Length: 214
Length: 129
Image (cartoon, rainbow over all chains, first blue to last red):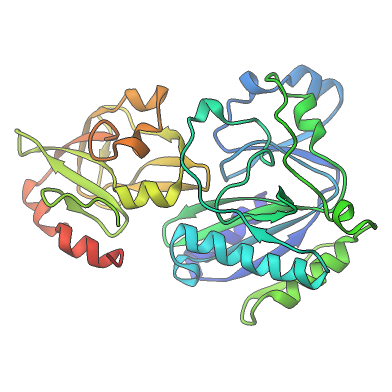
């Protein structure tokens, strides 16, 4: 998370454009920037199970980072334009990479607003407009932060496993699972390296792409 | 097309400024276009009364389902009130951005600075409408 913030800082200060692909050691539970974690999650249980946690600079709900590829894109806002345009363009590139891996994707349509109190706890429970769906389920969960004239968008592309841990440590009743994984879709194990390579291939030139952390 | 009232002033960062009966105190919030871009607003971090800001200073943050964004003060002044109703119901920003979804009331340092803000037609052009 600190590295993602450094990429955002660089975009703010120098206009640098970055794509970072990484994974987590140890597996970690991340919380959204403004989530009231004591109210939403059983922190005693999290401590007893020695689950590593971190707070994201972006908003949204909790994410369990284990069997996934995490992407981070930092760039001047002018690179992608409006918030929705940025969301769609970054997801379009990720969808292109998934297509190259043999995954059929669609983009979630925009929807009407719902009350925050109706929102489920897991990041992956409900798709937003512009997000990538595979067979109607989310395979990527993303969030964006904008600071001055730059943006950071990062997110989790699920390779395998599940978000069940989020439900297990939540104080609220579990939402119906809305995610799927590449392994489930393709019916075979999918490695970090092959997905990272597909994303790098789908990305335009002129972006710092050396930060693939395997 | 988003709603851009003719009687307000705007910034390129999508804040609006509404003048009330007292011309030295204005209400500030984000535009209809901005709330539409952000999606459902779920959290706001707003300043307390007495906080002082210069033009373009960050006065708070807004979290919506798609993004967290900083809020920039359109004009220099001192906060006299922040909208407490947004703590319980941040989605007021979505439902009524120019009314109940206002964010702060600001005592202007120099009321004449209002003239430097965008009028409705210029803001409409800025967002391509």
